[in-house]
Image: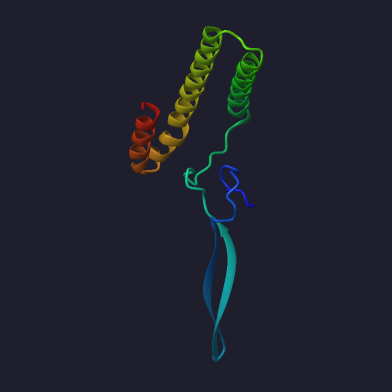
Length: 140
């Protein structure tokens, strides 16, 4: 099993490919071709293949939010194991949904302030199309 280099999802090795590069080398009277093969990992199907270096504060904030959500999910699991009343579980699931929506809002705001703004400054207007697609997925 190998992992996607972008999101660490196990890929089963299916996304590995070998890249061959030919280099012409001229020395004196001879010209030779050297072939170099390198293993190249590609992104898994759900991954864009891009990555962002987050500052420590942003990363820590997002991780704390996810850990809280993870704790809430474990709480619901415990409620199910203890045969809690349906509406009590539904209220907790609603709180989890709100927490995930809040996480998305923070992440989206950070993305727009950094990734999108930087790409636009560099003249890459294609980032706007990417943002529109992302917003459409979030608004389903």
